[in-house]
Each structure stands twice: as structure tokens, then as C-alpha cells.
Image (cartoon, rainbow, N blue to C red; front, side, top):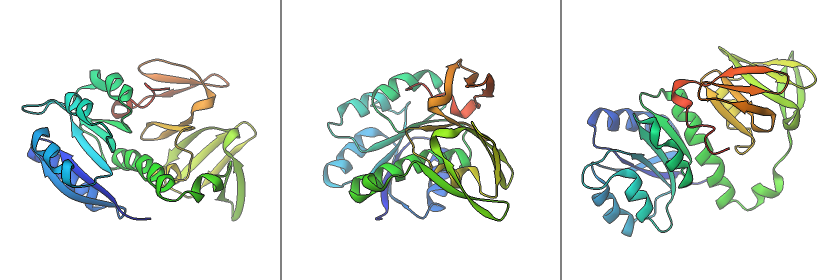
Length: 231
């Protein structure tokens, strides 16, 4: 798969440095340029094809949401902001994710993994035909087949994860962000640095927690408040 070409539109130097450092750690991302305002970014986009924009909301001259509305065919967009009140408007504009500052590297990986999945499907037509409804994971020295339909939620336990399904629980040595890249992005949502939930198993939710099938309540992490706004 070709690298995902991205730009940063952000007027805070520290935020630009953090994003640039995070991007440099991800092999499938390629940072093409950074911009302090959306006007200069617009000029760049006229002559360059970009796959992903990291977009701040509060920018000089032209605000992030207003800029996004000017793009007739926008690439994938991940909003980065300290203001949670724009989450709903952002998702109405089909942004891929909404990162609430300050966000850590693990939360960043969760967001770009969604872009990677969509990018792969767009440039490799065979991917959609090969999508499976199960995954094989190492469990007690065996490769166990786990159906996506049976998963209720996934909980991080340091270098291990606990997968809770409708049948039983499994413990596998894999990181949550690595496992997240293997899950269907439309059917699973990361709502906390330690929890990924199955969308189909959500029965209700508030601003602070999600109620799953069986009465299980999972907290929503501070940096993940926009994760389920577009359900």
C-alpha cells in the first residue's frame, strides 16, 4: 500500500511539533507540509494531492470548520482541538476522527488506523471482497477463531488484551492499538485508551459512559468524547 500523504494545519508551534513527531513514528504516514493558517493550505491543495489533513479548529483568518466547508472533495480529515463542542459539527462533515487536546500517541494511532483502513480499501479493490467476519488470535498457545459478531468489548491489560464475547472471554498477547487496526472500523469504536466496544452491542450511552448488552457499563475517556457522536 502506498504511503498516506498528509499535511498539518495548526497555528500552535508545540502542537505542530507533537503531531510531526507522532507522524514520524508511523511507517504508513508521510508528512508533506505544515501550515499556520488555512488560506496557505488551500493554495497548496490546489496543486498537490493529499490523503489526510490534521486540522485545528481555531485558526487565524479562516476557521477550521469554515475551511472544511470550502473543500468540494476533501481528503480524510482528523480534527485536532481543545474544544469538544465542535465534535458534532465535525462528524456531520464526515471527518474521520476528532482528537481532543491533549491527546497521547495511542489515541493518535487509533485515529490514523481508521484512515489507513479506508485508504487501503480505496486503492485496493480486492480488499472489500476479502473482508472477513472473524479474526484469529493467539490464546494459550493456540490460534483461536473469534467472530466479530460475538465480541462485546475489548479491554487493555498492559501488553495483553481481554476480549469479552457472548460465549466466553479470551486473553491474547497483542496491544489494543494493533488489534484495533485488524477490526472493521464501522463496527468497533475505541471510547477509552483501555476499551474498544462493538457498536452493535451498544444499548445506550451518555457523555461519560456506554451501556453494553448484558448491563456492562464502560467509561468514555476524556480524549474520546467525539468517538460515538456519529453513531
